[in-house]
Length: 238
Image (cartoon, rainbow, N blue to C red):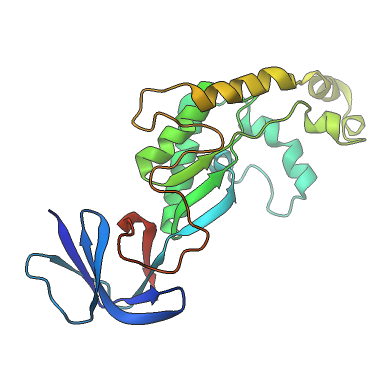
């Protein structure tokens, strides 16, 4: 049995106050909350002085595909301008590209204190079973809990936003007008298959709507508790 004693940190208790206590970790779970200074003979000490320990944060709205599009749109661009360039930023992505985006996003989230997220990723021209599973497996490999929910639409922004198509000229307008998305029924068939088809990786039910590597996120968390999976807690600079 692997045992670690985290000492010196300020620990959030009952979602109410910070306390000078130590955390005993056994097999990646918080086994005990001990008074500061108390030792455990066979536990490896971990000095967390000048840090705080809180339950992991949850990012409830993220888009992993943006990880490979940083810098592709000016920072001061309005939403419509950003979305009009989305096709060129995200079209033609391979399964490896989708997985890499999710991995980069997961690492960034973990560095910022998140242990779970809701990822609305995009795969063009429409979601596939393989693409959805690639994203879910990427989160599994990094160790971040995630709800994987592909973005779906049956119209492009150029069709949906009045006047946008008319703003283009010449060959570019023709190219934009020719862009289409799959019909609604076929898209939903892929989504349903992604939900039910097994894959080869350990998280066999990677799917839009539900992919949990650990226990589901509790919106009423009350701070660090006995029995919490250690990956749910985040140690940050105070």
